[in-house]
Length: 116
Image (cartoon, rainbow, N blue to C red; front, side, top):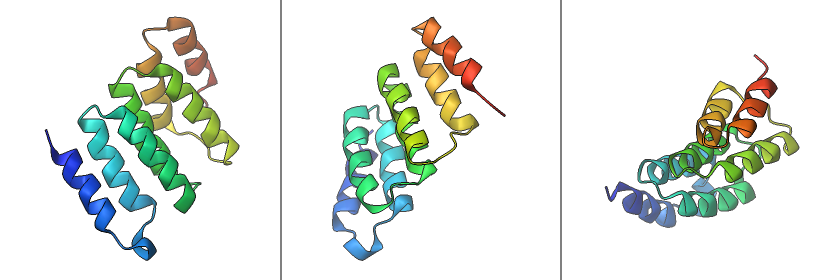
């Protein structure tokens, strides 16, 4: 339950020169597992200052938003990934489609956008 708080504390204590996408990804995943999608979005914005083209941080944030049923955010994050010249993968689309399943026209559009 409270592992996400520990992950955030460890992130705060990490030296700036050690911060990278992997460090943020771990904290993002912990936030996602605890359904702390607002905190995951905040961390994601911080991670973009360090490593803006890391698909793992995008996917961890997408997963957190999926768990929080925040489909509009998943759509926005997919667009941002493309803007950063990242090719969303199966994990990206799976999280987005799952999240958008409550809004089926969007889920269908995402499914049609999926290119394997």
